[in-house]
View 1 (cartoon, one colour):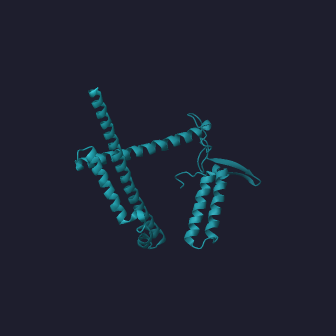
View 2 (cartoon, helix red, strand yellow; view 1 turned 90 degrees about the vertical axis):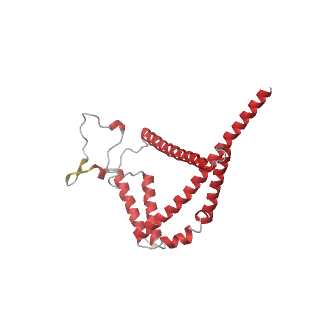
View 3 (cartoon, one colour; view 1 turned 135 degrees about the vertical axis):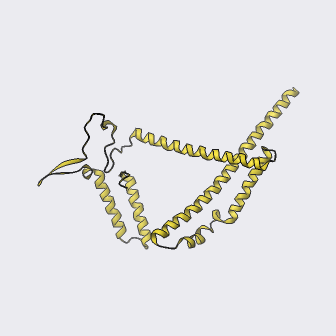
Amino acid sequence: MAFDDDDQAMSAMYDEGITLKRRAISLYVSLCELRSFIQLNRTGFSKVLKKYDKICDRKLKSSYLKEFVEPAYPFRESTMIHLSENIEKAENAYANVVTKGDLEKARQELRLHLREHVVWERNTVWREMIGIERKAQAANMGIRQTLLGNDNDPRKARLQGDDVESATKEVSTPIGRYTCPKFLLSSSFYILVLIIAIFVVLLVVPIMDKPEQQNCLAMVVFVSLLWATEVRLELWLV
């Protein structure tokens, strides 16, 4: 009985040690992801403002960063220092639980776990994207023809030995017969023309107070209409 009690006690201690190890790894990974998220957003603001200054011939980057970005809580220096201190605490906790106080070995193991977590997340995202793409292709999503493209209906797919389908079509008019590209007669083309007309109207008609606001509104409406009507352009055309 004493042997069984000792065995159960050792098993309970081992389970608690494994649980503490997993929690320390999870805490370390979460803190590192938070630090990467802050750095990524800080870099994003800088690059977007740099691109804006280059395109619009402005000098907004330095003033905007000092006035709006740097004073924000996530981007303060004190926040990064506090976050680094918490990461060090997580490393010390892992060292006390797993590596018997060896801090350098604990950091190496934690970085290895962090690298494995990043690779696993990246592979998971790619698998999900590929799965969504395959499901979309299987369901066909009702999108069978792209502007300036061919019919994607699998039932009409060209097989080996079939004649190549012509990209033009002959149209009869009161003044004669003319040959024109097929995409000029598709509904997608007329929808695209209407969307472009709306985009031009939004650019010309003064609705907002500033030209930048007017351009942003026109672009948002333009992209939203393309997405809502499912007008798809060939990549080489874009």
